[in-house]
Length: 566
Image 1 (cartoon, rainbow, N blue to C red):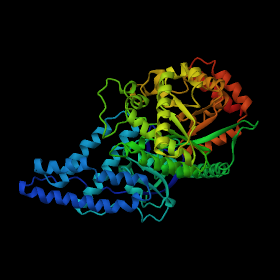
Image 2: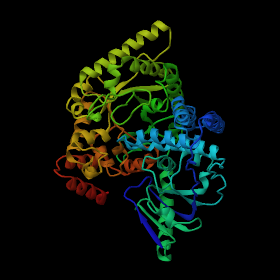
Image 3: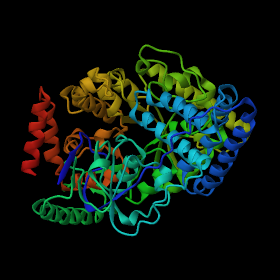
Image 4: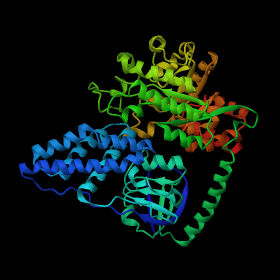
């Protein structure tokens, strides 16, 4: 028996089964120099590989947005020029030129502080691998032949690996590489399958056919476990299966407490595929549509028409449910390949989010006009990120009025009075919540950044990561102040940070009066269950006690006491 452990869970749950280990192909470049007269032939080889991969991706791109983005990347002119330049000036073959160019581009992503953006380097490497297989005449990775229930084990899994995978046969995922925002982690969470990533040594420990127990809740992998452990996990899986069945019964029920207090359960999404998946859980709406992904997956600022089509499709998918779209939130650790940011000592406190929009008004106005037009097809709410002052909110709304006037002149239909709200994610916004609430239609609390800014703790810094804790009494008081100010102004207050999907936070947030909980789609049913099991009056009492605490351990103790009493 071998036991492997990791520090973080990518997607919770327990699964067991035979391992299916995805063997790695040798995709290292053939390192040899070429004569100058061979350069044209190598460029033609690379061009042929691009054409072949494009043909492979085209049918996939019609079904899934991620492959549409991959198709654009394969055909990216900057990537092509980089490869061809290395062939022609470096006198190396196409494989070496491709490898080096892709590594340079991926390094840019991997240097970013944001974990999600670091993981996007994997998309680039996925494209590189596809092209390398064509150049080396190797077969595509094909998992379509799996016809028995397995735990899939791999060094990493890219979208192209899983495109033809029949997920009816996959019980869980284990990868040696990747992070909790990698493709496989996101996919597993959305599907409700257990997954552990960054499991060092798993490829050495496991062979195809080995029996594996994957306990993502305890962050543990057992390879060929002893019979006592296997028997113990049979019982645990039976309990888990019953729990899933119970949760599914809640899908079409409202999130209402035992004493009749109702809240909304919404999903955070980044594209149309995310919305389709979230609708399987009967969500009340989308509390956060991260529009920046539309920009990051492009090689240019998307036009008004391009954005309009996406927002319109999203609104139609939701069929009248709330759709909150955050305006472009780039900067800090989220960059664009086609936009040069100034070099900054501290980009998280720099030129980002609404600050870019109010400086480069043509960018924000293009988006606002697309949002206004799409508002004719559903209930679209516009949300500004990183607001710190009433002046910023007024400036953004002034641009919104300009957009309305321009659309009238152009004779285009648009939503005359969309709801317009702001993210509460800075200490300034919390302290100005009363004044902001008087001019906003809604608040949405972004606890990821709010916690970071309030505690002055970089959430990407491993050295102080333990200090990053939204259960800190200071953060909880900031949340309470925001909700109180929003309600005093007569507006709805939601939360779209990860904290909204934390089961331990649910009774606190209920008691603080949060109106809308928005989270990853896979977490919605568990949160709904917590709400339906809670008594609102008891949650009010818990929140009152929590706000009097002085330390994180005291907060944790109050939560533990609440669980014991409920």
